[in-house]
Length: 343
Length: 180
Image (cartoon, rainbow over all chains, first blue to last red):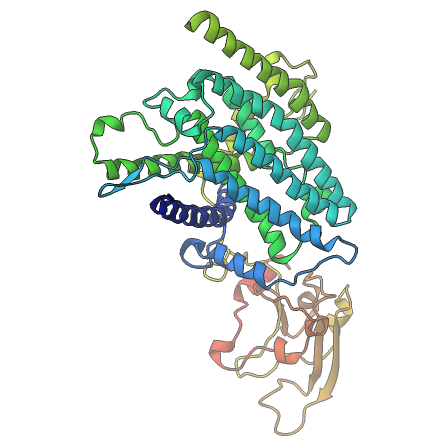
């Protein structure tokens, strides 16, 4: 017996999340330019529409109208596959994020999570790792030394920083005892946010999230000033658009994951004492989660325009000699605390 | 011995462990950038707002007419001689009968060209001009895609006859007289 209601629910939710992800990615580009401008005493885009709000639309149209160039020496199929994989993995991670409390239509419960996987966190790590292939394949297929250098940098950076990222998550998992993201979020109800119990884990995770998203100070894969454009040097038109777009979606999703793992997801202290009706509580919870997400997106941009880029050896040293030992220490300390103090 | 008190002593001592964390320094940096977020913006919204331009500003040239609308220039060539960039060329012509309302003296410039790509906007031409004919104004040279559009002939240099087409150079003139 197939539960058609469930399938319909999920399809609707997938379409909504897909649209929201793309819209947020589009407006992140606008936000980035505005934040950059404001941090540099400028105003930023303000010509297209009121406050320049139509700027992302203009940029999108421009991307579509640009000539699409495929280098003659490139591998045509892989050249196309690269951005596709990158975009697909960026969008796939949003599947396991619990966006809020369920909505009710009469008796029908509309859950706001596409897939309540019991191995949710492993799923994120797995999908994010595939995203590395998108960059690697794109850089390799371009058949250009700058692209290849960018791709090499990206893949080694992603591998190096996935280790401490995983370790930081393990410490959280030790405390929650579950891999299910919804359960981790629900355990942080009230003000029991993981960031207070795992401050070191949070800092490690945050640094690794910057590295995984290829954001400054870890933007070596595309460092404009030395590698032209890094792995997307040869890309043009909407293929380049996909790469840039996927990066912003990655930023959105990793902000959502930081909010879920460390900042209580859609929970907010005092929200239960208001005695809201279930639907209203659901909407408020969605807004709370998005407020947290937007703060972290802003934080990503804020850091980008503050901290300069690392040198490559510094990047590797930070990853392997500082973050990995620290994260192992964090796991050990958490484990010791759980076994000897708490039990 | 220091001439000013602004010199900063640089110490090369080893970083202590808090400094090695870099996090305090990063937080400091974040505070600095955030303080700029709320500062007054330096942007001038160009086509609507215009920056104050000083009276001594040396912008696009103008060839002046006198009060009756006659061209001042007599094609003496002093500006071309004075020009260090050799941007000015001209061809002189004799005023015919019936052209008295167009040209102030018997000789006038039939062709007067300034190559704006050569011009360095030094103002030597107006200094050399004995007839009050050429002045640099507060207008800005517009950009263009084609190089040959930068050779400005009389059609672009000479001001209009109508009062609203006149180009005001009084500020510049005042400043110029104070200098000399």
